[in-house]
Amino acid sequence: MRVKDENKRKDIIKHTLDIVYEKGIAGVKMASLARKVGLSPATLYIYFKNKEDLILSIFSELIGEQADLSLGQLNTELPYKLKLKKIWLQWLNFSINNFKEKAFIDQVKQSPYCEEMTVKGDLKLHDIGTLLFQEGKEQGLLKEVDNSILKAIMTAMLNESVVLILNKQMELNEENADTMFSMLWDAIKS
Image: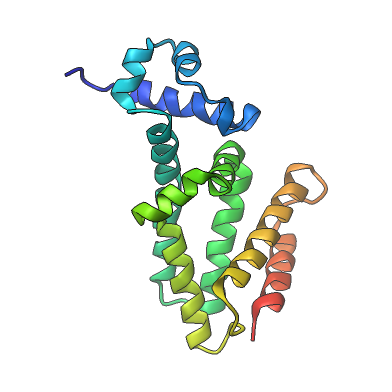
């Protein structure tokens, strides 16, 4: 069995993110990806069994990294509102500074691949969101609505804020971050 080179693996992931950003998930063709990375298709399959494995592995890795950061915030002794703000700002910063990765995550979430992740029980972030919302509800701080509604409000605010910042219609500074979070808080607080 051939030894996997971590640099090649990172190149595969980088080029996959580029392709998905430019053409969507459907644009990922294993043979074409192998050529872009400078590998034979056979070598590519040493790293990932097939396209599904490639997509799910990258998604799981990206979500896992962010989920671990979020979980670290969740387990702090900060007041709930500040904890929620720190997690929201973490995702805002990730989305701005890693727009290809964020676009990849968003596309996978809207695809049949996400259903596969749910079946495998590999949606750590979903579990963290549930814990976060449950904590807020238990403290009487969040509206007693379905978590999917809370998630939709947070996601919409996050995504639109990212668009404004990336399109240079709004600067990311402390004042604007506080205003955005304040508006989000007003929408979900009890």
